[in-house]
Image (cartoon, rainbow, N blue to C red; front, side, top):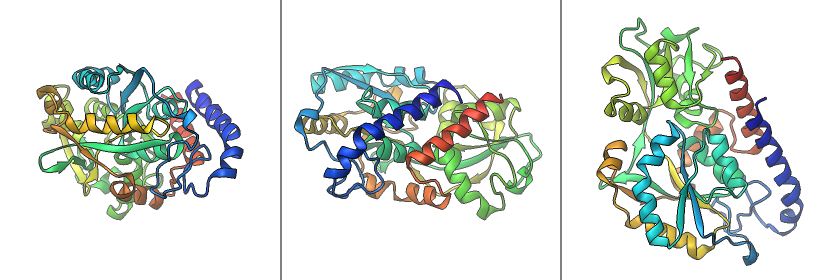
Length: 336
């Protein structure tokens, strides 16, 4: 077990002991939320603390975006947005680089992160374990952005159909990733290819690393979010013609933007306004495949299909599953 996984386990356990008993006495309903949180209005996300003295109104907002690629890339892309957010809220805004979905979730749970963009798959864990409240997604004039699970191979590879990948080296991104792990486990068996049975998933850590691994021949194939490949090709990191898709799924909603449940409700409302009023820069629109604005989102409604995929794979968005999946990822990394 690496130090990060151990830290996450200890933090989750400590939070459970510290907050569980008190919350259990006062919370009428929490659904699948961790014992640190309550969901009295049954909208599937954590309520603001009943004790107003626990509401946070920091002078500096800590922001980050899901590390599906190099975190430094997104720090640059969101620089103008951070300036807008600072001017709109009257707060300083600092970007917090995280190296994994697990670290991002732990940062919000521990109170080190106030606002962030979470990948589709990790959004459920962020909601249940970190008290994240999703409220926005990227999109354009036609509506919110969606993406598809794609299984890719090199264009010059001999593989022509999914069943050709039995016994081959197939990369998954990370345990909490929707398109990079959960969706393949739910959807590919119906196409004749069952992860764990027909191949042993190899966790690369991130979608871009899965793509680069296929490009260099380290992996025979990879389960990825197709929009990541599109962005990498547009930046010239890889050539789109070097890959073929053996499978493409129905669309999923894209990454969420969520704030910590314990932000002062007035500040949370202001953050929503700031997102709604922002128009993407030309660079952001290029990087995000034509997206030019944020759309409002509702976790209970918009992530229903993602929760179903998790249920189909027996991966409830709870603490036990989170620890189990991250232990698998740590083990895979130790073998590289």
